[in-house]
Length: 258
Image (cartoon, rainbow, N blue to C red; front, top):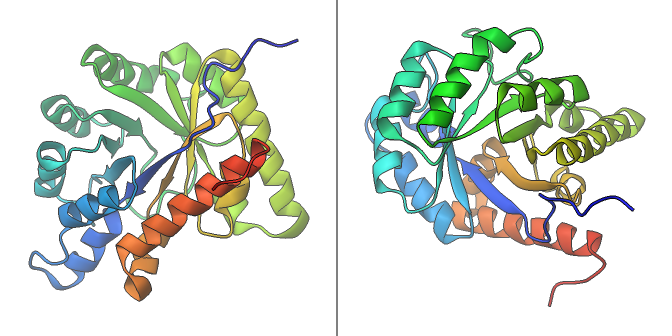
């Protein structure tokens, strides 16, 4: 019999990404809508944490936004960042609860895939070391490939976040194949001692199959929730996502919610 999973849990955390509240604000300028207010509403509706990505080109979240999120939130802040000296300096100044290192290309509309930890090991290692030394929980955003996870544990991170974008974009048998890759990678993460998170592109329909994977302990969801908020409010969108997540996890554990 295998050893009990060190990271599997009956509960599942929800991190809400507020980047695209800032996208809407920046389309016109000014200060409305405020991503900090959105973060506070998301927390009140059931989010366990808030994620924000300060990009090199500042296309959505601004320096002022990230400072306010770090200083005004009661929920943990997950600071998404590229591995650059500028972003490391900001992270070390603000000391967020967590920092997720992600790949970043100026020309992309959104993050297109995971970090290549295998081939960028030496480039990433100093950033991981500095964040670890500052007491910030470091994660790497990677594709669901065991070789990337092996490099992640070797580089010294406690957490990985699996990129679910390919799974969400595909349909039919191709989606099933991607789901299996995620399941196997989550299991592998557990076996080698990594806490496993997942995110990118998840919505009400694609999320439950990911939420049912017992070795995944946190989902980070943003664009869909902000879009859904236009039609029914952020409070409603987060509460529904939270309920669907809990249902999916409960069914996987062989029980039903009251």
